[in-house]
Length: 219
Image 1 (cartoon, rainbow, N blue to C red):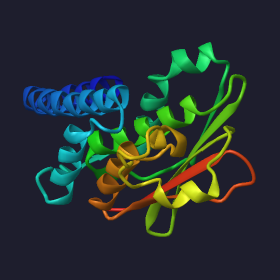
Image 2: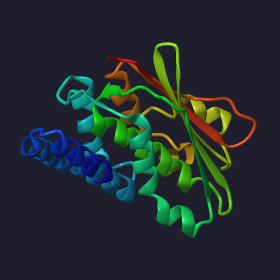
Image 3: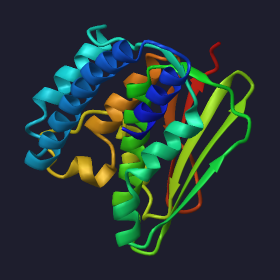
């Protein structure tokens, strides 16, 4: 909502088509909300009831959902997403450090998809960071790509689970999704990034867990 308000204000100041922008964003916001509700329902009911999210992933995989690129400032989106978690961060006394490189160029990508990527990773980090712990979110450019990393001071991820983080959890292994911190959420995150020519992987760190994703620079 915050980043949408910024864009509406910008369009209004420059005489842009505010009505058209609002209609497009409202429609896409409801679609994104539906995706989030389905994902949350799957988490609440358990790994045996993930059909709706699997359908979303298949639509992403086979072109049923395609990115709608637009130019926006990644640093502003990161700040907006982080602000959504002010309450759980304050309640659990978690330190959130944003390290956003200055002078980052605008990125051209599907704003709703990248917002979902950031939301998923930050939510994941908060849920696995102990009270009084910390999370660091960095964004920078290197060569021809953006690099974003979300690191936390949680318990980390066991070696035997690292290779299945971005795969669908098995119905034969109850609790596998929560134990590995992967499953449906990260599966969809990876596919969204791949549709933009990017990807995500787990970074080797001495303690905690760190996820790094990349997106190509596009003019």
